[in-house]
Image 1: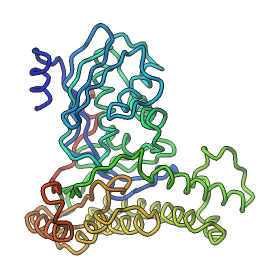
Image 2 (image 1 turned 90 degrees about the vertical axis):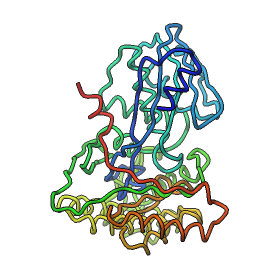
Image 3 (image 1 turned 135 degrees about the horizontal axis):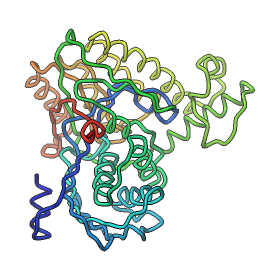
Image 4 (image 1 turned 180 degrees about the horizontal axis):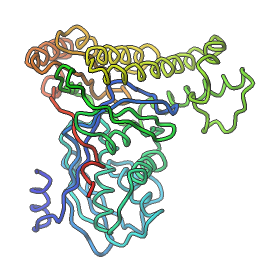
Length: 394
């Protein structure tokens, strides 16, 4: 691993350990968790590695192969507010872990990502990989629920991004060749095996060449609009409601939405429309996977992508071009924007036998529209893989 080589070069000794967290794709279930909905997802055989060594003085010193700035803090003296760099997720993770367990040992670490940044949950993956290293050097064992909660706290409470638990759940619970079908309201989940009757598939990441940071995107505004829709619908229907920040579309029956949706401001109605229809797509997607129908599952992923454009109103021109190219390409079962959809990448489930033509046709169409992104655009083939829990069971 490059991170191990860089660690040896920097510190003149080998790292003690190597932690890893896979990144994830969510072909159906986009923007569901913001309203405590259901999702489907897969972990990838690519992700974030951290080569690390304990520091008995309690100092955390981390560097990244993707970013220039080295970051440093003490486990007992983390800056109380974010510092505005890539390591904020790790500072937030340190605080989250320290709230539950005494921390006495720091670490020196080198972070390496095997995928481009943008849309593949790199923030959640680096947080979980770091938490894994930090708990090991401090002799701590986290349950899956504790890992998800700590990683979520780092993003929400410290970095300030109103994410749900989709990323963390996929990266923790996923299993190779099984579809994660999870309910983000209560944390329950099911792993649906890949049927022997299912046609073979692989996962392709089409990276637009444009990186994005969620903290500076329109994500938080979309989440607030969906919450506002739920709050207003409760009011129209005479339902009990409490704090705005604790209001979710999951609280409001679909029938109530249909009855009062025309009273909602247009942006709020669109967010709710996406959320309710996405819940239906998720349920149908779980059935399709269970029955071994990858083509039906793929069509639902394409529908999810279209609703994200029309109703969630995400997608820069580059991502929309990628999505449209995917819909026209033989050999792609389905796909959509990955992540928040404000740059980053699209993901697709493809027929492995058509891999060469799929990569060529999508790449040609995209670079014809955006020739300046040649050299930055990438197409990467991946497979499903085990998540954190399966890799850390003993």
